[in-house]
Length: 83
Image (cartoon, rainbow, N blue to C red; front, top):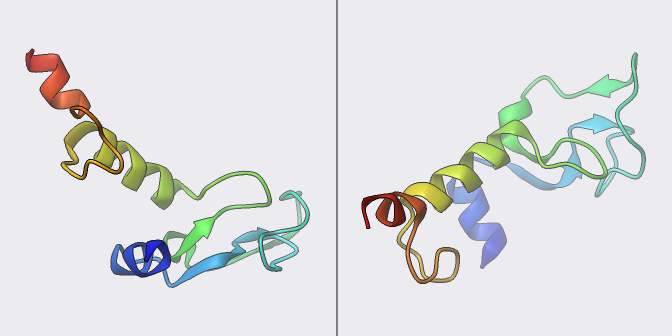
């Protein structure tokens, strides 16, 4: 279910790291001169430890404006600001 939702949001690869050694779940960190994928916004993971910028933006939008109770309970940040 989660992978389907992430792919719906434009992520074509939710298992491989965009930077590093480009293996599943990125075994190493991203180092100068290392491989970097050309289509960064399609990856959920940047390296072995960090989500990609596209993933962070998606998470931030969900926290501020989201309505899904699985992620923002009891209310999202924008509703909290107005309270």
